[in-house]
Length: 317
Image (cartoon, rainbow, N blue to C red):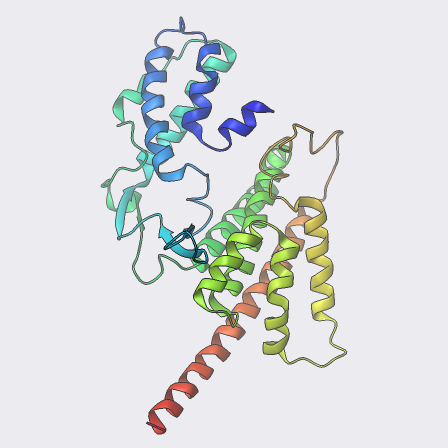
C-alpha cells in the first residue's frame, strides 16, 4: 500500500523504489538499467502523472494571491508543432519492457539494442513515413484527435482478435481500456467545447469530474437535452443513461481495465470470467457513436448561434 501511495504513476520513482531488489549481477542487464533510469527520468519530466498521452492538455490550478479564488490554466504537452521519430519511440518502449522482463525473470539480457538510442523519451527526425507530427496549432488543445485515436485503436485490436482468436484472452482488457478512455474523452469534449460554460468553469469541472462517467454525464446531459429539443416521449437519453450507469458500475474510477488490482490491492477479477467480445465492442461503439453525433450537432448549433450573435452586434453598433 505504501509503495502505491509514494510512487503512483511515476516510472522514475517506481524504478528507484524497486532497484534495491534487482539482481545487479545480471551483466549486461545492469548497464541497460542505467540507460533505462535516464530514460524514465526524462519521461517523468513530461508524463509524471501518466496523463500526457491520455488527454490533450493538463489543467493547472493557481491563485494570484492567497485570498483570491482558484483559477485554472491549460498546459499543453507539446507547445509547438513537433516531428517525432515514432519508430525510435516504440523501440525504446519495447527495449524497456525487455530489460524489466529480464530482471523479473532473473535472466541475462541478450540484446544490447538500447545502445542504439538516446535515453530520452522523444527524439525528432526519422524517415518521413515513420514520423508522428504532434502539436499542430489548430488542434493541439482539442479532444477529438484523442477520441478518434483511442477509439480507432480499440477497433483495430478488436478486428485483430477476430482474425486470431488466440489473442482474445490477452487483448480483451486493452481493447476495453482504449474504448473506455475514448468514451471519457468524448464526454469531456462535449463539456469543454460545446456546453454553455465559460472557460474557467469548464476547466474547473473537467478537473473536478476526473474519470467519473456518471459525474461527467450528469454535467453535460442538461445541455444535450436543450440542443436535442426532442419529444418528451423520446427514450434515447434514458437508454444512454442505462449505458452510462453500467459503465460507472463496472469502472467508475478508471482502473479496472488498466491494472489487475485497485489502489487497495484488491483484485478486480477474483475468479475467471468470460465475456462476449463482439457484444462488449458493440456496446462501446454504440455509446461512442451517440456522443460523436451529439458533439457534432451541438457544434453546428453553437456555430449558428455565434454567427447570429455576431451579426446582431454588428447591426446594433
